[in-house]
Length: 284
Image (cartoon, rainbow, N blue to C red; front, top):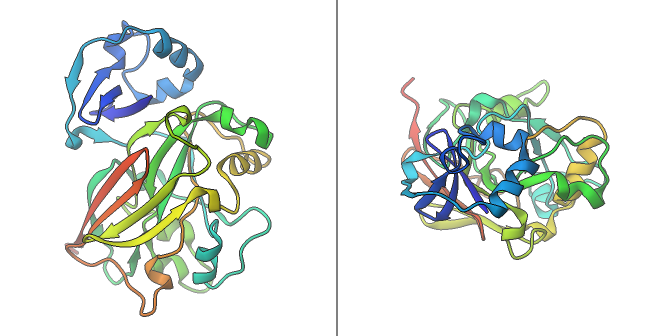
């Protein structure tokens, strides 16, 4: 199943440009907002499996918002691909990789225009994002997928000057400017992808590919991340986990490369979909 946020309403996508409004199709039992869907995930799945879906309507990409627009928590994982750790100047982690947050105000949908912070070096990091479906606390790796509603595409856009400024790094601030957490274009349930543990991801700038990778190369797999995080914190329905980026970020290049006014960043995960961000100079 592909579950989308269409103008703030939960929608089951039948194709890339047509979907069924959940609230109407369920006789107002579920929706219209996405948050209530995740809070009642098991009941929603039971209904969706047996439902005779209602009227199909056209969906334009301009209507699409973040698949989980109001998470309690946005958790992001650093250095979770070995080659990205190396290009960043670190050893690959043997324990849980660095964990930080992207603040809710940075969260957007899949097709956006992003203002570049003045005086900064804005970088790209394509990631698979897991959306939590059930409260997770003390979950084992073997049962972790049971707590994942589905997967979506994310960009952990990062302003490196703020992120790395002395005397101590400010990861969460540097990664939480307005528009720095685009997600979408929809959530895809794990059963809909060929191999939920081996997804291809990548991104391009102005048509030139800058990152590619596969989630089989994650140091901490998605179920292991869910399990490890849940040993310390409680994960709630609708929460987002940005699971890590492969090598190819601008900071690790020689010479370094950062996003510029007019650049178009397209990010993808095979079997899920694409994001597109256009960047413009800040008016300030």
